[in-house]
Length: 273
Image (tube, rainbow, N blue to C red):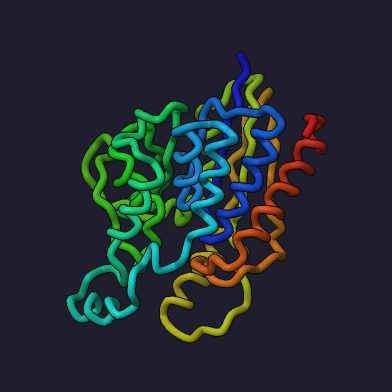
């Protein structure tokens, strides 16, 4: 039987648009058989995989509307202490981990109702790694660990333990995982909210880091799906800029944009929306 594979990109606060995309997809009767996620998209993907229903999407929307940067990072007052102590991060990941546990109350990835794949970047090799099992909080903390902002997470990659960081470093839209999974007749829906590189004032080292990462992600060539696999791309308008990666003041607008984007993608693919 053909399957629906949902692939969620990273994109920081732009991840809110994926909620709107899910409203359109599930509202059209399209349910995921497999989800794949990178960075913030991995959190959205696993939240859906816990309960792939429209009601769950609305709960996810409520949580996004409540989101503020401090919910992920805590106080900026911790930055000087982390620098003085020569820690390889500006913020602890404890608040992020608390959020993950509250949003997705399942201890292990394989415990989700829908099979899920979480992408990370192996810091030793620089390569993307796709996990289909493991401790959920560790995997999502690794997938969202922006280098220098959050700490790397030690994970077992099947060969040895290694530090893993944000999936976007190696592949912000983890399409290569879908390539490995998809077979003829499957449909792959990409929920792509990749943040475009933009001209910005470089006020501090973090601005330089985030800007450099955005450029690196933007210039990567995506993986190519095999024959007989239908691609339905839901691509958020790259010209829309919504502040920094942790600016959550545009959430409602991103919901609406994401839903409109997915509706247009479904029409283009000849799928009733």
